[in-house]
Length: 489
Image (cartoon, rainbow, N blue to C red):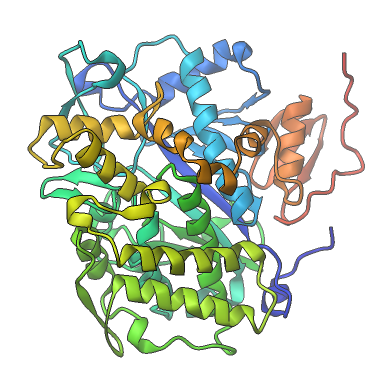
């Protein structure tokens, strides 16, 4: 593959964007006081019993490096899976979903007792719910989480030259606040809410400083725009920057994962090509953080929000941005998944306008959108009212998001034929052990699979005996000339 340069992102044929996802999984303890602080125990046990695993891995000081080029580590009590650097939204969504299989296998191999593993980004701190599901005969209760939110962060590579202007633009936060199709749904104190992560976002829309973000809840922004010395552990050059979207839910719908990643990449292109096409101020929010909280609680989707140039609903803003992406696609050669996602958002938004969310009546959105399917099954199939004071509702809410043992959402999405058309099972299984071909993850993943890596991280692989390779170029997948010889049995 030819070298990709930042200037290519302003050409008539922009390259696929490198995208990566961080997803924290909650391993529930058997004691209420333990919360989900079993991540380190799970990893440490796996490092000694992992011979039972079907895939190769490399245990470093604090991370489990995987053959797909990603890794697992313990982060503030959560078990975090990081996808490999993926070229385009389809590779990234597939690698993210593969993480669910990897974490489930890890949990199965480890022998210590736990109450399930959950893919979930928010909770009510005061919730005490029955585990339910496969263990309904047990009356013990556990907290839904050990912390107010857990992380699901999307990372997008951008040219460093646009980082400062992106921070000053209302475009990205306006989009993130209205990205309704990405919401995973949660039973909150006031009833059913659309986004699991809204309660974890503070007063800031965009920020460039990640200091203190873990300790000061009110300082958590919707997204970070990282670069320079603050990001050297991931991005070793100054020609690239990284957008880390923190206002994001970890749903399990394949359609939603792909559409969310593709649309966000395309919205970043609206900024990169702002000299070609400008966005009407009527569709840029005046106060995006405040709007994000209100949108999450606006189940009828009827509310209108103040914008820089007037007012608009969340659905209308989402639809307008999708239309702008299609318009940009007539000027430049946008990647096909980004154009597909824009068309899907327009179609889904039109469907949304015909639904009755307060009655959990979502039409065909229940085979695509996480919060719609969850609400529909809870109320119309299980006959559970999603009230924050209902132990039954809170228990179902948690069971939906469980990935090991298999939870309700996994069963639901496996039954939806359209999900297979978006991303197949075969593609997800392949991504468990195979890295993307055209990013630096290909080198890291192969070195782990071949057993020649003695240490590895985002920007390097050490082979031992003074040999190794720096992975400074995220698009470079070429093996070094002195790659160690592999002897196979």
